[in-house]
Length: 99
Image 1 (tube, rainbow, N blue to C red):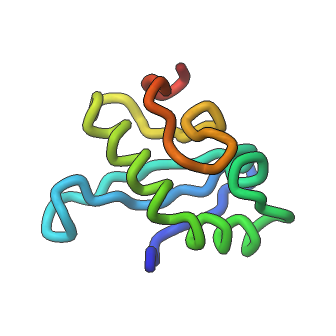
Image 2 (spheres, rainbow, N blue to C red):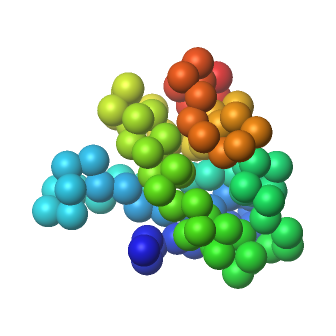
């Protein structure tokens, strides 16, 4: 179960940590938009509801965040709805952050 996730209302994201080299390696911060949590994963509400939705779907979100990080570690990871299909699975065609 993921333990590091914080809702940022001013950024409209949930920020979380990923560990590309496992827990013994460096921690990398990534974000998922509130819109993604609502539109793709069905979150309702703010704050605790968004964190709960993130945690329920952590495995899918983590896979996508790691994939995006490995593609180009210099680009911050911000997951948007286009990174997932309607069922919440990762899409093969999604590009780098902001794409």
